Image (tube, rainbow, N blue to C red; front, side, top):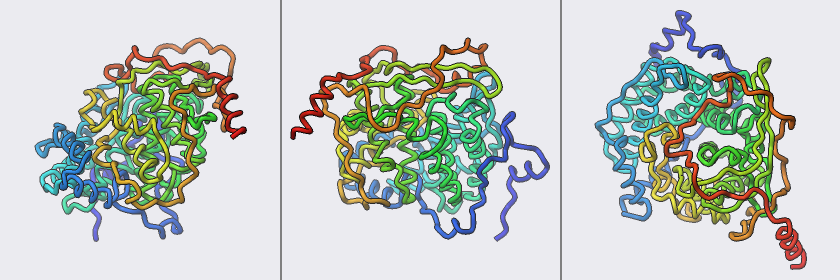
Length: 498
């Protein structure tokens, strides 16, 4: 079969680069799959939803089963899920200060593609599949670059993994240009995300909070799966486990306490970003799981412990926080440090559509106790998606609709790629957690006072999703940093005696 030369290939052929500023387009991880890896095919559909998942949703909704019916009603009510949606593709998408920002056009169109594709699989209405295909084909035929401030890395990560998920749902549609969509992932989204994991925008590795790494990991993993590049999948998995940045699992969850809670380092920043991080890590784990890779259970289910911590804290419960200092700055430029000394305040009404996926994995697939996750999922149900959580970008960071997509009957789905790990200890609902813990110690940097703040616009860590409307509630229940040592010793003595 003769492969058509796309507009993007023609641009590259005449020597017009697609690099963003000083970011090189040649990254540390080549997209060519080694011959040995090519013998192990990847599953399709196999990002956030498998064929079995899609069949389950359709059957449950057709039967009027709860809570699927409520979840589907949430989907059909969303304006993005309508077959009349018309795309508005752009050649260059900008995100960040000092640029004509238009990235909202991209994320609205991607969510419309995803929601229409999901609606098609549940209802069987071809018009929604056709709409999703039209949106995705329009963008793959026009988008050539992502530009802006450091926020361009967020755009690449977030919208890259989301584009791949929407496209995966229609990859078998006769009118879908799969090759061009794969080219878009390889040439536009993936290079920025992979480069961020390698160079971190030329900043010291701890300059960026975990969410920056996690968006990049999600994009790299989604690219590898969608484009059938196992070497790229392995790159994302390896970084999740052992990466130097704050988004690898042991840096994002640096302390595991004796009660089974895993301290989420970004809880020292604010609630909105901590919720985002849990959602992104869950997304990475789910996509890997559907390819037979168990990141959910990695390191004795470390992610379960971190998600339980954030769920308890977001529900208004007391959690500990170990003070940590991280280095900031540009390599060869300004430098400083920042200390998070306690857990941030919370608003128990704040939520993101992240809990159903995580709670159902651990409690239904694996049969593990996760009371805080199940409470958070119940409180958030039925989960919506992009457009249901405000107009700003924070409301579009997750694809959502977890009540519909991830609710499952216990023990009816395959157990997955690995034996179930030993259950994590279930935290006691009413007692405070210990301030000291076992396991990995928090990632720390210099402890001396920070250098003077750089001039405005030079703080690499200051960029990002700083929209406070709907996400950064200032009032709420203040969680207590630290625990009661006496209670910990009493509990230990009781266990030893028993």
